[in-house]
Length: 109
Image (cartoon, rainbow, N blue to C red):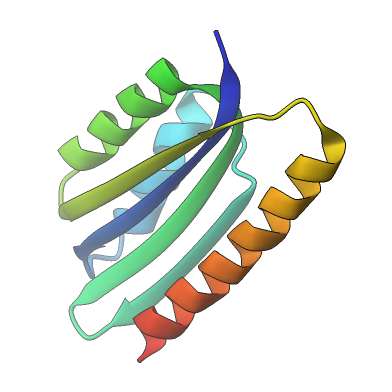
């Protein structure tokens, strides 16, 4: 199966345990996250999680498990297959950082 990177954008109610539950889901499956960014805005928490070296089926299952967590209101999920050329991977990572920075600016606004 093809490995790649999954990005999850989560919106949840601002409950004290929501981040622990989200991170615990990945910990239970021994899946270390490449990055986690979370912000609290009023009564909502918005988080973006990046998981590398995962196949698309496992990534989809994790998205469904996230959606089933209490207080999670929405989960947007994208998957990018890994590329074999190192230069492409670097460019894609740079683009992903720009996208992530733009997304976080939108979240803060």
